[in-house]
Length: 244
Length: 302
Image (cartoon, rainbow over all chains, first blue to last red):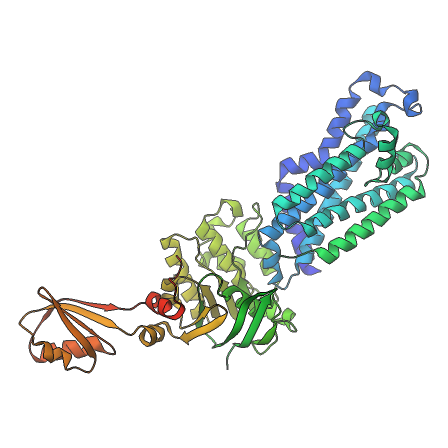
């Protein structure tokens, strides 16, 4: 526990030192929100979106941006790099266990995701009248499960990829698919219905986020699928993870 | 009492036998070299000693403990510097040392260690910005920061320029003088000759020789050669009658005496008795390089 705290302290410093990555992780979704929000017609309630504005409708997809970036991109590359460079192996020769470093990285990934989400929600509310999530408990649940499912997939990538290059080769398509089904590239109302429905069940489960944000409780099936993915991917990652 | 005992160690990866049958013992306070061509099983051997791998057969005892069962205890008492282990680019020297120091119950003072390893001025430098030699010294510092009783150093000076390599050797001698037992894995003969009290030569997973560097040379490649220009004519028989001498040749004005044992003393004494001065005298001895070739049948890679 003591080693974990020390490692977390140092890893936090390294995390804060990498300013470009930090700003992208925390700030990018909010930046996109601001750009979209500056278009007046997108701030008008629209029957296409059940009387909400496009900005409100699109906000959950912007959450997907951070979740996908951190979960399936940054986390696996950092862990694969640490393994490739022998950082984990060196740690294994000391009284500290390399799992402490992995745990510290997870904590930082979560912190980044949380900071990004809070910034997005607050700026959306203050600047563009995007309501706070109307079903807070459901939203928290959908957010936690969606995050867990993507982080678990990221860990699985880190577990099976031998090198940083291999991790990126796996992470990039996964990232693109996550973003696509999350309605980031094309807003979901423009996607064919079948694609949008698939997107309900691919991590992080953007429909559950949207439902909870705009007022109804998320569907149990959507949440259950995310929980199953999180547990299955997490368990496989734990089984397959190599420290060297 | 030996601090490390390895008996009939065996380790394979699938069909590949990395270590076939390796035995040796390391005495307290010595620098023990593990020498061998690439792929001979050196690294696997020390990884078993460090408790990073489970042997398939044989025994390993470190400080009287079992590297697997007593791993937690041994990690406090054994420092390991692994081959090609790096650190995060943005981590600074002092941060790395303070972090690693925090893992140990009785660590060395990071600041003092940095000064001792000539890293004091680099304390706030990021790992990425360090030179190869500085990275290597930091790596050694991390292996020492827990105040270990044993330090295992794998391919310590690979990739360093000659000056940095010599500086590192000086450092290792200092560490030994402070009472740490050192296990040094290397494929540089010069390094082993300069540093090691004893070396085990490993080839294809087997120990092919175990002796002091000088002992190895005199046992495996004992031939010595003395060249000189005598100040007065010398009768060949004067020299060839000596028990140490095996051959006497002449090339121009030079006499070349080949032999074994205390050849130099024997030759110079007999010359002195006859009041002959040996000008331009040179002694050519086999090196560990030659012994290595004799033992393993290949040239050490450099």
